[in-house]
Image (cartoon, rainbow, N blue to C red; front, side, top):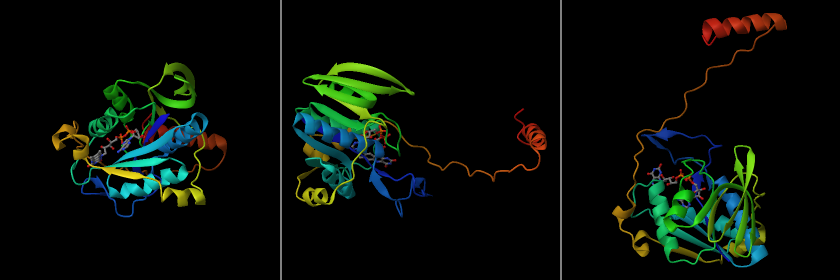
Length: 257
Ligand SMILES: Cc1cc2nc3c(=O)[nH]c(=O)nc-3n(C[C@H](O)[C@H](O)[C@H](O)COP(=O)(O)OP(=O)(O)OC[C@H]3O[C@@H](n4cnc5c(N)ncnc54)[C@H](O)[C@@H]3O)c2cc1C
């Protein structure tokens, strides 16, 4: 099977984020594999181990993304592809990303593409469905289970806490939801092996794309942090008095009742 994982390098939203000149500051930011893409990588490795074939992990980004690609190789992917856009494309959006990926996949014999349900930074959840539409293949989002039997795929997807079971066929694109699996940590032998695994680097020109083919369709007007929360208030005394005070605060201070 030809299995591909699209992986995004994101900043770690658990760490402190600062904004400088209207953009998220890279200074001091920690970068990680988008957590939903870790589920996609784990699932791809398990499917390969069961059905045979090869897993290729692909990212669009700058040269620094090699680190996350090596981590994916250390987890067990077979090959990595970096589409390096740092010299060619200054700005991009979901259109840019899916268009570049579609151009890459156009000439490939694809059975399965896995990605994250959403990137924890941009958070649009658009890249997977857009790519599948451009490639004209079936897609299922927010999946929590995937069984492949020959050409047939049985997928369970999360629908706001409930589950939906879908039967479909390869070639297929799926996006991973939390709960799909438990992503492995790279082992020491895995890290050693990863150093020797192939990493291909491509640029926009190699994909027969011109810079204006991938110009973003959207413009970010402003990025800002949520307003700081005021200090909380702890009510004290008898429960009855606390309830009275709470009602009074809600009526007179918060003015919500
Ligand atoms: C050339 C270029 C320049 C960019 N410049 C800027 C910029 O100046 N400012 C800015 O804020 N953002 C920039 N971006 C990022 C871009 O706006 C979005 O982050 C990107 O299109 C994905 O949208 P999202 O994060 O909402 O992903 P979602 O649609 O939420 O991601 C879902 C899944 O799609 C896949 N995916 C998403 N992005 C990538 C990727 N890059 N490579 C491989 N797989 C991926 C992953 O599997 C991910 O889990 C740039 C992107 C590109 C390609």
